[in-house]
Length: 299
Image 1 (cartoon, helix red, strand yellow):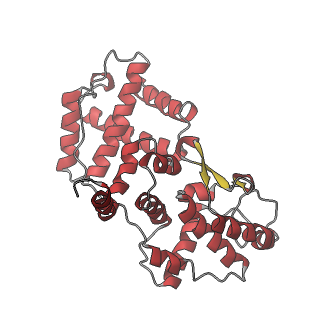
Image 2 (tube, one colour):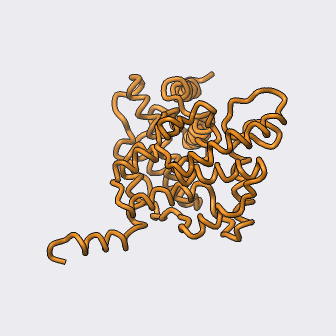
Image 3 (cartoon, one colour):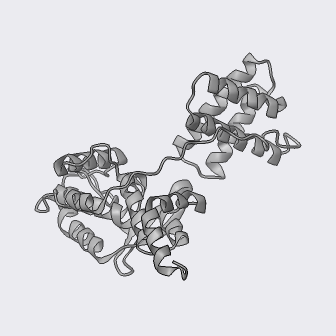
């Protein structure tokens, strides 16, 4: 194994062992670094001699090849993380990419589902069936907690605390956060656990600790939850492009419009940086204008 590949493999191991990143994320880092490695070979450059000039040349070639800005910035982010690690481990004395920035991203506001459509979505499930009651509980939980689909799929029976009316979510990087839940969603979750889940569990071949079960009594994964959501959208006659993540956006936007502070919403969503949460403020400009008109002494 050459030194270049050994360094990349050591970096990927560090991401898995020390930073506890997901297999999917580590695979993406590996793919981006493999692409850089092939480019360096074509340019007859060494991994450790890659500098800001070469980096700009690499970015320019991707731009000329019509890669979209998201892909370019993702690759640059992976490469910058790698070279920062090379400095940390003493392979390099200084970071050659600290002065390199990627192309500006066009700002896309997240899609949200309006309250009326959420009500329609919650009116289509047959609550007399185990699957219908389960589906209702999942959709209610998405909107009540702002959880990601992977977080809901990863819930176990121990994730819910009925005494404290809260749920423990396992977010990105295996970071846990506790999100309070309102009484309505706790009630539907209780009905699911006492009525629907035992019936679903009977169909399984072995006991399962997952909170949400399929009709075969197995853990309901993200793909199955996504498929269920699409079917519910169809029954409700709503835009089929909506996803569970749009309920997360709706959760954040509705909290801000009803007076929640940005820091609290950041904690509830599990965002590492406040700047990630701030995009939701752009969705409630009319509300902010209303608050300004009411609160400013000169208005």
